[in-house]
Length: 96
Image 1 (cartoon, rainbow, N blue to C red):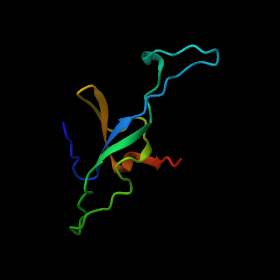
Image 2 (cartoon, rainbow, N blue to C red):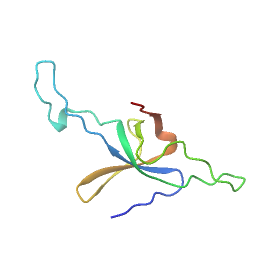
Image 3 (cartoon, rainbow, N blue to C red):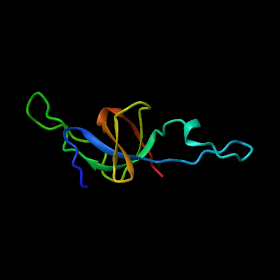
Image 4 (cartoon, rainbow, N blue to C red):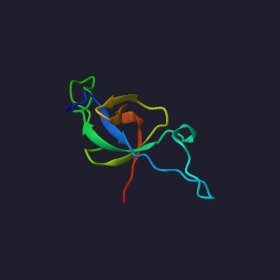
C-alpha cells in the first residue's frame, strides 16, 4: 500500500530498540516505553497558510527524527506499525 500524507503531516516508522537491563535481561514489550525516534517514510506538501501559500516542510523522506511522546496516530499497514504526525510534533532531526 502506498500512502501520501496530506498537509503538514508525515508518515514515520518508529525505531524499536531492544531494551536490556544492566544485568543483561531483555525487557518484554509490555515493560517498554513508547519509542520517540523514527524514520520518515513520506512527507506531505505542507499546510496552506492564510495568505494561500504553502508552508515549507523542514524534514525530508529518510530523515531520522525525534518526536513528541504521545504525538500522532498509530496505524498498521501490512505488518508495519506506522505513525502519522504533524510537522509541529517533530522535535529534532538526528544527525549521525
